[in-house]
Image (cartoon, rainbow, N blue to C red; front, side, top):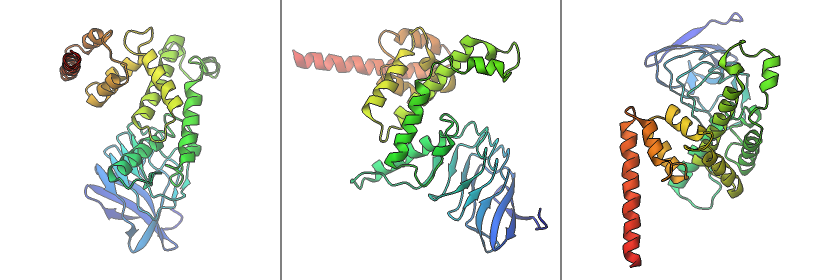
Amino acid sequence: MDGIRIQELDTEHGRLQFKVSDNNVMLTGCRGKDITLTVPEQIAGKKVTVIGKKAFLGVKTLQELVLPGGIAAIEDWAFAACRNLEKLTLPRKKLAIGQGILKDCEKLQMIAVCTEAETAEEDAQQKKAWQEDVSYLLAAVMGKLDAFYLFDTLAAGSREWFAKWDTRMMDLMEREDAEGFSKMLLCGEEDYGSKENNLEYYIEQKRRSKVRLSMLRLMHDAMLQEDVRGRLLSYLQAHKKGEASEETWRVVLEEHGDDRRYYQFLLDHGCITGENFDAVLTDLGAQHTEMKAFLMNQRALQENTKDVFAALAL
């Protein structure tokens, strides 16, 4: 490439490919079966500053990647199609970002940067929770939000960044579910006769997208305004089990089958209630016995608590 020899550096389970120019290092490829990988600050005595075009394209095993503080640019499709990548750590600085760097990274949940909580309290646990919220919300920028302008590791976590994030979120939440369907058909974006060409299916997917977005923001609620919180909560409750549309429940059951956090979330936010409890258990069936036991135990605890308060009242 450009007359510069490609060199290789061994990792624990593979190799990084790189080239050196102008006393800097550009990563050009990654091979092997690393699950977690931390890119060194320097290679061959030179600072690593660029992740080259398609450098990590389609690395199937990679789940967590940490980039060094000297990184200044990430070129086109650098991490595209890393379908098992869950967490990416980036330096807190202005970066030159190419197009599609995280395209088809379907499992990406967190983009971690060092951020400071906007609070006077020096509480380590609170700071950690704040940083986790920022990481989850930053990862959603180019997926759930489709808002490249919010992919800013320097601004992420600021009051202004949260405000812009929530503005974009509510813009998506308030759009009609059928919006874009006719345009999609006219542009021929889907194969004729496929289920994607069905309006009912299209609306269902739009609702699921809104459910995922609402749950994400409520689970990571740093700087969330109370009126926005209320609107997100109302949306989830309007699509819980037993409503005309049950997409809140379907998303949890089909996408988070045995993840207790999501069932606790539904309990805490009025999406599993006495009215739909039995129907929820029926849907869980024989496949999710652990979650059935968890919900039944939670109901027993609630009933016992009510009995205690009733006794105190007497």
